[in-house]
Length: 135
Image 1: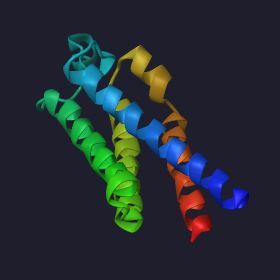
Image 2: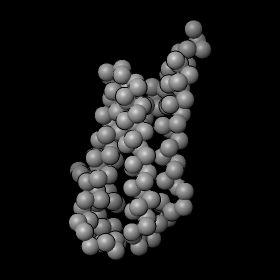
Image 3: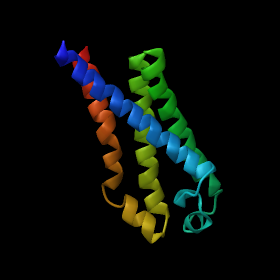
Image 4: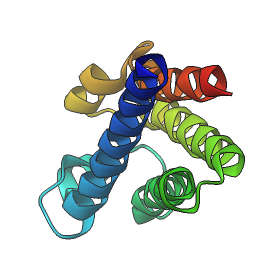
């Protein structure tokens, strides 16, 4: 019995943590002070298209992640939740690689240079392994 409870506690704790993390990121972008929404950050891009679309795309991906985690937590449809979580997080990580390639901001380059965006795949991997292990 304890062997089933501990992985479930870990699984749901990680899901709640990821949910809260992306919720606070969205809050900071739109209602708080966030580096990614600052004019200094947006002016560091060499592209001439709408720079605010960068923030919008990342926000949409975060909403997709939140909805997917909601499917896992509330609706209990874990399969669609896992697929949506991976889709959102994979695209978010790819967008961070793209951001680094288009920006000249030193802080952004230090935050997301090299393979650093791949750390965003760690928790989804653990969540997926725990989910598959429970089946």
